[in-house]
Length: 116
Length: 112
Image (cartoon, each protein chain N blue to C red):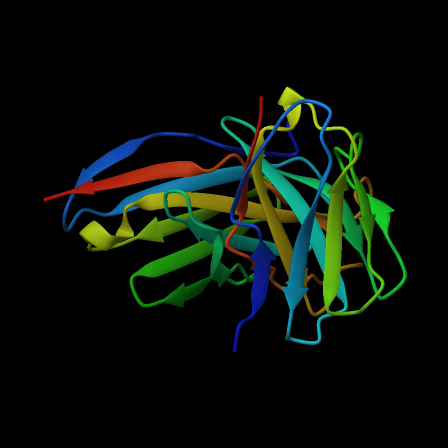
């Protein structure tokens, strides 16, 4: 059982380049999330999805776009990378995610992105 | 004020020690609380949920104090393998629509 799989694991971009991070989950979870983690900042939510075909902004959405065309996949795109987007990116999924009771998040292994 | 605050540490303790972490949250309407563990350069993993009456899982005990809006994690008989960063996680019903908010984490280092 793979759980949550992220690709790639590492990437170096030059300012202005674009890329897409792929997240796949095999747990039939409805909710999927993209976080970034920076030293001293903790995990911050970029975008999330409550189901196939839906996306919504999180805490720090600027400079990123997402798509959820299939339930099992959640893509994070950087159209024009900036050095401020150097970070570790984590994808996560959960069985439920809205309302009073949240089910725990299951995380992927992370993508370490450096923008020069 | 941050929505979820933790003492970043590091907490340096000897093997066998008991160590406690506290975490405060700002939204009194929050209903779901978790502790996650994150090893260096790895993904966060769920350690335990925190229930209203408090709960225990082996050497780990979690407590919730709604009146003071904090949760705690107690680790007894610390092991070297407990060295990690512990993340406090709370759901934010109003500002984030029920999504989970992470604290910065408390670093624990258990020494021989």
